Length: 239
Image (cartoon, rainbow, N blue to C red; front, side, top):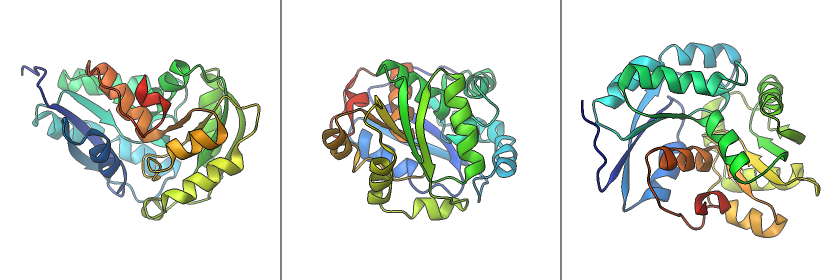
C-alpha cells in the first residue's frame, strides 16, 4: 500500500475500549486540518493484568486502522506503553510498523521525547492511577533519566471513571503535586481530560505542562512531518 502524505493528515489511534477522552481532545486540537480514525482494544480497569491483556489485541487493531490509509498510528495508552520498562514504547512502535508499514508512536515514548525537547529533567507527575501503576510510571521515568520529585494519583482503577472527571480535577491535582524546584509537570493518562487547563497551569506555575495527549499528538505530528504549531494547549505544541 502507498501511504502518501495528504493535505489533510489522517491520524490513526488505537485506544482502550473505555477511553472517552483521547479522540475528543485530538479532534479539538486538529480541527480543520486533519482527521482521527480509531480502533479499540478491550480494557475496563487500569491494572497490570488488564493492560497486558489489552496489548495482546494490538496487532489486530492496527490492521483495521491501516485499512483507512492513515499517515501514522498512535498507541494511545500511557500506562500500557510503559509497564514493561524503558524500552516498552519503542517495542510497541516497532511491532506496529512491522505489521503495517506505517510509522507509529507509543504514548509513553512520546512523553519522554516531549520532556527531552522541553529540557525537563526534574518533574512532578499527576495521575488518576492506583499506586501499582504510579510505581511503574515513576520507575519508567527514572529509567529514562527523569528525576521524579513528586508523583500522586487519584487511586482510580476503573477507566470509565477517569474519563468522567472534569478537567479541573487534573488541574487541581497538578497544582497539588507541583514543587518549586520542578522544571515541568506531566499529567498522565490519555483518558484524563487536560487540554482546557494546560495553558492556565503554565501561566500560573511558570513551567511547561505536558499531558499524555499533547505529547502523543506532538510526537505523531513530528513523525508525520506535519509542521504546524498549535496554540492554547501548552508550550510543547508550539515547538
